[in-house]
Length: 403
Ligand SMILES: Cc1cc2nc3c(=O)[nH]c(=O)nc-3n(C[C@H](O)[C@H](O)[C@H](O)COP(=O)(O)OP(=O)(O)OC[C@H]3O[C@@H](n4cnc5c(N)ncnc54)[C@H](O)[C@@H]3O)c2cc1C
Ligand code: HEM
Image 1 (cartoon, rainbow, N blue to C red):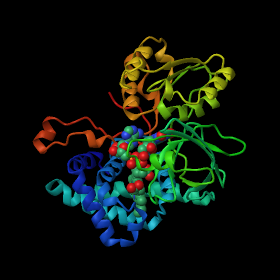
Image 2 (image 1 turned 180 degrees about the vertical axis):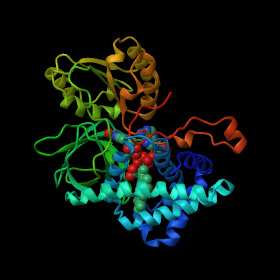
Image 3 (image 1 turned 180 degrees about the horizontal axis):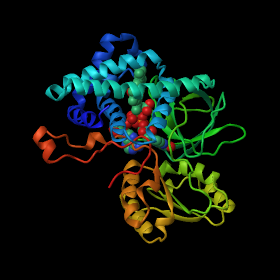
Image 4 (image 1 turned 30 degrees about the vertical axis):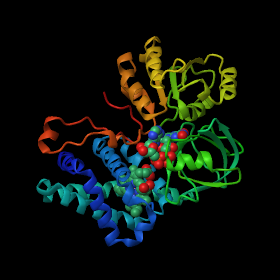
């Protein structure tokens, strides 16, 4: 498998991503109409998002062909794909349609070598995903977990904290997230962080902030009631604690980024030297204060800095204030840094930290969702070559964004 051939043909396909995705789905559903039911009903209207999901995954794989973490990511992805009812035979169908789409879209850039390289690459990716799914099945893990809402606390109009009790134990590490789906929106899954370290009564907390016009967040904040049953996918993500006692760490939480950071803090003990930056768009959005006070009482050495914009100032000022506060602290080269919150803030902080002294490979965060829609597409090959935009789709395995 030649990574250079893969990358160069992918660059051509990626430029015509919308067409590639439309061709891919049309090809898949024409040859395998039985697979249509696995995908959301509004797929044709949702092509933009599909383009980004598919290409975010492919971009990540292309960028990380030599990354030692890639196999683990792919096994986790395969394990989590069981919630879509994906079966081993579906992988060949998806692979055939992907390669058919690439061949058409790449046009003259496609060759026998490119086809061979892609078939081999897809084969190894699919193999690892099927292996992850097979191992989970072998260990008796369910394809998803049904979980009853046992408590619901509203904070203002747009934020809710739900406590769920899964019918089967769901084992997770603090800092991980799960995909969530509700019965009246079949096939619609979105990731939400688990906001607690594992508990003896196996309950799990989710902090949901409503996004304007957001399909699932609006349903979860406005419609979910105690007694409802949600569906959860397998836990994933790499915002888990990997700092050995003795090495200091910084946790930065903005908005519902507090959820995974709270879970990480619950796992810390007094042997860890830690500092926390808590960012909110205004004082009213600093929810869950009693939990913070309990953590402070348990971890007296924890240094806490709360950041909000000045009254009446836009929430972007909070990011500016955070960056200033980070710049005023010392010791970054010794710290591991965990960041959670809105993608733009995570990206800005991730870009600023190396200049302060934290190496990029010691900055940990969740996958950043694709930001492709805001990115202008080059109109032709010449523009692409002259002004190649930086990759805007970020890796789903949670490495720090590049410079
Ligand atoms: C690893 C991970 C962990 C996450 N953890 C949490 C969590 O703990 N709590 C939480 O509330 N959310 C969390 N999210 C975000 C969550 O997964 C959804 O993206 C969010 O709830 C919006 O979904 P939706 O279906 O309501 O909106 P969609 O219907 O998917 O989107 C509607 C519109 O809103 C825009 N949009 C989507 N997401 C956002 C956003 N976050 N901010 C602003 N605009 C947006 C879309 O571009 C689109 O235009 C997490 C995301 C990731 C990737
Ligand atoms: C190499 C193979 C594959 C890769 C890399 C891949 C990757 C992805 C990724 C990254 C997502 C985004 C959401 C998530 O992380 O779950 C996704 C969604 C999805 N995948 Fe796959 N996938 C592959 C194969 C398959 C196969 C074989 C099927 C079964 C037909 C499938 C069905 C789905 C479905 C139904 C969704 C949800 C779409 C949506 O929410 O709109 N995938 N895939």
